[in-house]
Image 1 (cartoon, rainbow, N blue to C red):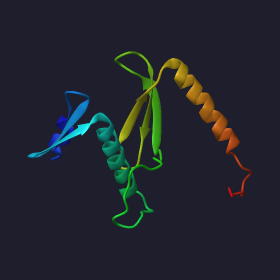
Image 2 (image 1 turned 135 degrees about the vertical axis):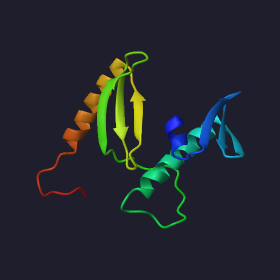
Image 3 (image 1 turned 180 degrees about the vertical axis):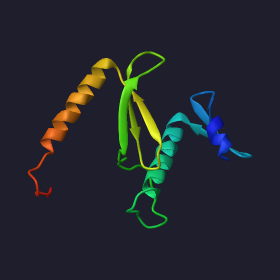
Image 4 (image 1 turned 60 degrees about the vertical axis):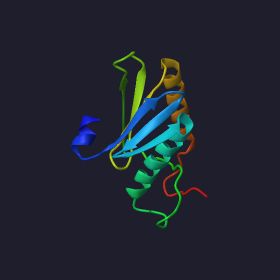
Length: 128
């Protein structure tokens, strides 16, 4: 959080009792259940991605989720437990890190390859 605080970012999320999250913004304090915090975080991340895109819906459009275009990706291993990680950069520059098990990483990689091959079209053809 130090980097964000240095930039004047004064939002902070903290674990709270009973499967809740406390969100602080200045003097404002919000108590959210874990599912509410997840939905709010996803909506905020989606809104940020859409705000950083060229094609935007009209102002005031409710945003709950979106397809997150990946602008860069990399792989590695968790320092904590050695499991594979997938790092995805989304518009706005945020890097989201997903940790997988070895088996799930292998299965996901194979599934992505199959989807990529299935989606290939001859040059000049467009989807319906």
